[in-house]
Image (cartoon, rainbow, N blue to C red; front, side, top):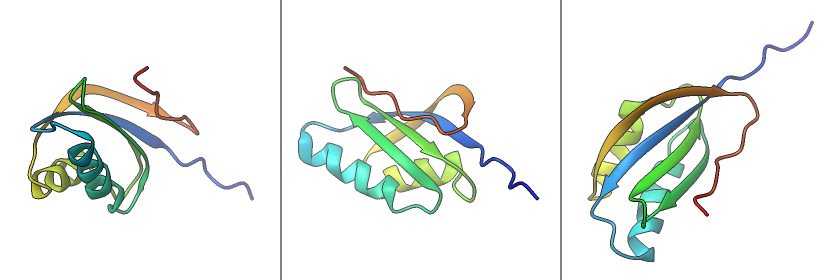
Length: 91
């Protein structure tokens, strides 16, 4: 019997209040603690976090984690599914 593929959701959050590398790290750590998060890329210059996650993690969980870390965040509506994809870098 073949295992079903795990569907990974790519979520983009627009994050306000990050001013330096420490704040970027705080946001990344807060999101990485959530169950189901596979990868996080936080860019302070674009004020966004790109997260690859699967259940049980939801967009609401991501927003809550960022808020609890002391920053404001909104979901940038662009739902995409990816199987085995990497979080693109903002280079």
